[in-house]
Image (cartoon, rainbow, N blue to C red; front, side):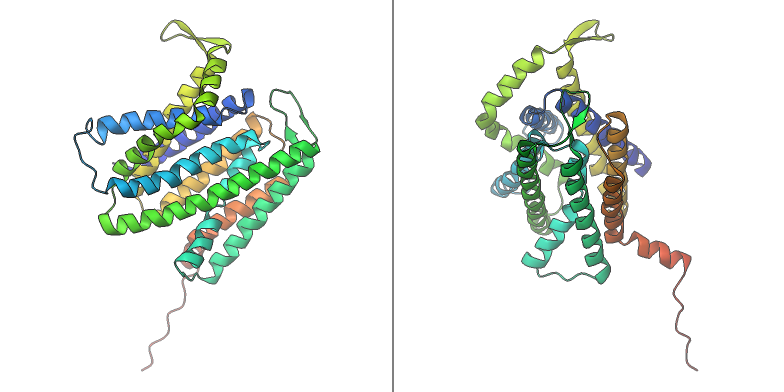
Length: 333
C-alpha cells in the first residue's frame, strides 16, 4: 500500500480524533471512561470480524501472554483518559504524552542495561525541560474552566487536581514503556502480528470495564440527554454527545490503522517523524480553535519537547551528514 495513503490516514484520523475528544471533554470533563470503552468496543468488533474471521482463526501468540499485555494496555488507556478529569488541559495532556521517549529510555537503561549515544541523553533532557516548563506555566497561568467562556487562575483545589492528573500521566508513561519492552520480547519469540495484537488488546479488557460500569452508565444517560443535532444524511436528530463519541471512535480506528500501515511500509524513523508532526499539528489546532491558554513559555517548552523528539530519532544527524558529508580519510600510498 502507498505510504502516502498511510500518512494521510494518520494525519486525518489522529488529528480529527483529538478534535472530537476536545469537543467531548469541554462539555463533560469526566467522560474519559465512556470514551475509552467505546474505542475498545469498536476496535474489538472490527478485529473480531476481520482479524479473527469471527473467531475461527486461532491466535499465534498464546492468550496467557496477551493477558499480561492487556493488563498494561488497559491500565495505560484508562489512566490516560481519566487524567482529563483532573484539571489537565488537553494541550498539556498531548505535550506530556510526548515524553514517552523519556520513560522508554529510562526503563531501557534500568531493565535492559542499554547504552545510548550522547545526543540521545541530550534529547531526553530537552524533552524533560520542555514538559516541566509547560507544566509549571499551566499551573501559573491557570486553566480553561470547562463549560466557561474564559479561563481563570488556578485555586489550591485546581493545583491539587492537576498534581493528581500529572501523577496519573507519569504512571501511564512508564506503564506504556514497560508494555513496549514486553511487546519486544513477544515479537522476538513469536514474530510480529500487529492486527492480532490489536484485536486481543482491545477485546480481552472489555470485561474489565464492568468495574467502571456505573460511571459509563451515568455518562450514557448524560450523553442521551444532550442537545440534539440534525444528521442530514439520515434525516434524524441525534444527541450531539453521541455524534461526538461516534466521531471519536471512528477517527481513533482510522488513526490506529494508519499507524499500522505506516509501520509495515516505512522505516521506524519515518513513522516517528510522522507521529511527531501529527502531534504538533494537533496541538496547534487545539490551541487556536479551542482557545486554550498558551503563553510564549508554553511555546518554548513545546519547542523543546518536539526538537528533543526529533533529535532522539537522529534526523538532525542525518540532515547534517547530507549537507556536510564527513571527509573520508585519504588513502595512504
